[in-house]
Amino acid sequence: MPLAVDLLHPTLREEKRKCKLKRLVPSPNSFFMDVKCPGRNRSYPILSNLGCLKIQIVFSHAQTPVVCPGCDRILCQPTGGRTRLANGCSYRKKTR
Image (cartoon, rainbow, N blue to C red; front, side, top):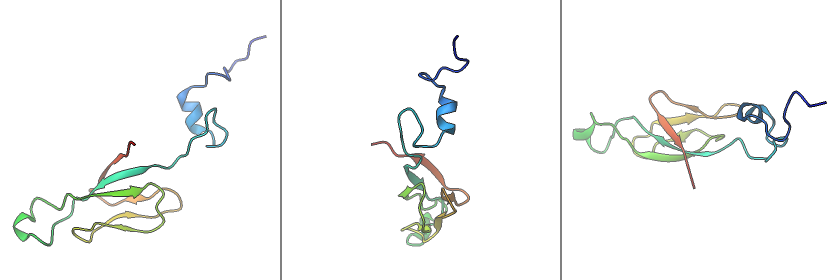
């Protein structure tokens, strides 16, 4: 009698929904990311219309607010789990 669900080859959607410890191959839910600041540069007022555009490396589950080193703008706010990005900030997952 065949099973209705294939336990050896679960779908990607089923694997993502499981707890990180109960997956077929355990992997963490957290990651590092590059966050680009859209703020204004206080050091160079001539370039203020272009924005700061500095990139900061941030942990996805950071527990403290992350501030841009170029313009002192808050990039991420901590929540109970993942951080909340500020309006206008863009990010990408870091690869090795």
